Amino acid sequence: MYDEERWVNAWIEEDLDPNESVHVIRMTYPGFSNQPSSAPSGFSTGSPSNTPTFTLTETPTVSTTSAPSTVPTYFPSSKPSTTPSIKPSEAPSGKESETPTSAPSEAPLKNPTSTPSNTPSLDQSSTPTIIAQLDILKEIYDSTGGPTHWRANNWFQPGVHFCDFDRIYCVDDVVTEIRLEDMLLQGTIPTIIGMLSNLEYLTLEWNFDLVGTIPTTLGDLKNLQHLELDDTNLTGTLPSELGLLENLRYLEIEDVNNLVGSIPTEFGQLSKMEEMYLYNNDNLVGSIPSEIGLLTSLEYLWLSENMKITGPIPTEIGLLSSLKAFVVRGSTLTGTIPTQIFGLTSLLRLELDDTNLSGTISTLFGKLTSLQHLELDGTLLSGTIPSELGLLVDMVYLEISSVPALQGSLPTEFGLMTKLEELYVYDLQELAGTIPTELGSLSSLFELELRGNSKMTGSLPSEFGKLQSLKYLKISDMDTITGVIPSEM
Image (cartoon, rainbow, N blue to C red; front, side, top):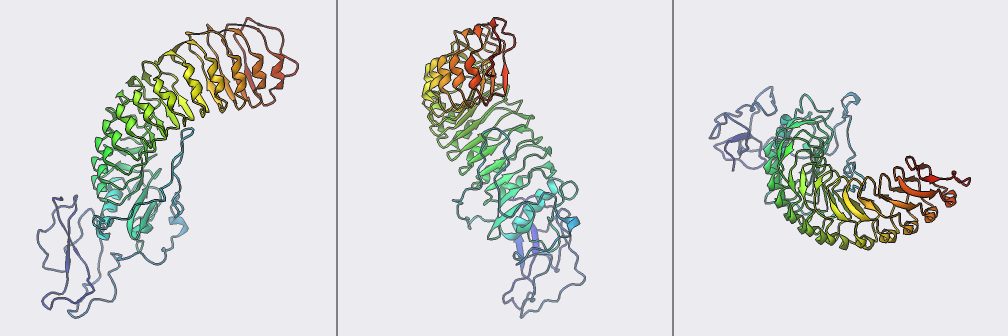
């Protein structure tokens, strides 16, 4: 499995063979060179150039009848009972609580989950040894500029067990979480990270100098549940090997504009996936894979601002019965809104704006009774605004603007959406009729924008005086609206 070897001298507290004074443990790792292929004859072989250098003032004398009373201090054998104190000047600026918290949230309605409580038990058969974990962490530290670029931290400080390293969390001396977000990492993610077989949580986002490709060895982290790589300068493609992460529940790779290629079809194998955020990656191409319909546990799917994503919305989206948010704004998607989407009764948020979607606004929208947020602006939709939208009584935000082919009038049924806080129906040059007096029933309305609807007629309804929560009313470029602003306002 590994093509290079490392020999480590270690004390063993057990009876020793009379003919030898030291046991030699043989460990193999990638990344170490010029190591002997057989046990060294002397006590120490020296430290490799890319591992910590430890100096002994004198060579210990080993008894053949008993092991030394203490383990050499340069190699902690177990987690100390108390964490060594750190001087205030040395304290890390970004030290987190020992209790893992949920990942930061950027997108609206984005709901990152904490490490799930049903954590799988550690697989002792594949758990790396303490020595192996220490060396893997050292490789991560060195490859990402730890000694020179990281924010203040206590990694590899004297007397600090690796489970007490800042942003590292362990269970029974086994690393399960690495949270290095916004740590000023500089360099590449080493492939050896794939050896941390019990890793469940990996966050490397907001490290803008993190470069290189996403290692395919991440696919070896079979226990990984949470992965964040957003706001980095990573390059290459999204590796299909990520589809092997059978326990992955949360994936966030956004604002990584040097990524190329398409969304791998293998992502359809992530059967436990609950939240997937792959947005604002300017150079991702291709279409939304139909295999996305296999993710039956998926609740949040965010694919917005991927301007080069094309093709239709796959009909398989209708299989995602748990879906709460589907966001594809700012892409070049084409075709019509698939009717299968109207069976997603758990849907809370739907953003199809700034796309090339065409066809009509279906009356079937009225079936999405849980919907709270709907954006259809900047599309090629045509026809009329269906009165069935008024059935969406939980709606809080509705925007249907800059859709030049829409005709008809503003439905009076909009007055039934009493929870509505923001209503944007503007720049619809073909929209005619009057402003419905029923809008005066929207007691929660905070902002109303009707500007640019040049064919609407009549006057502002006096009922608008009932809108006690209204702070913003925009009715410019509506020359055919007459009368005065109601005194009630």
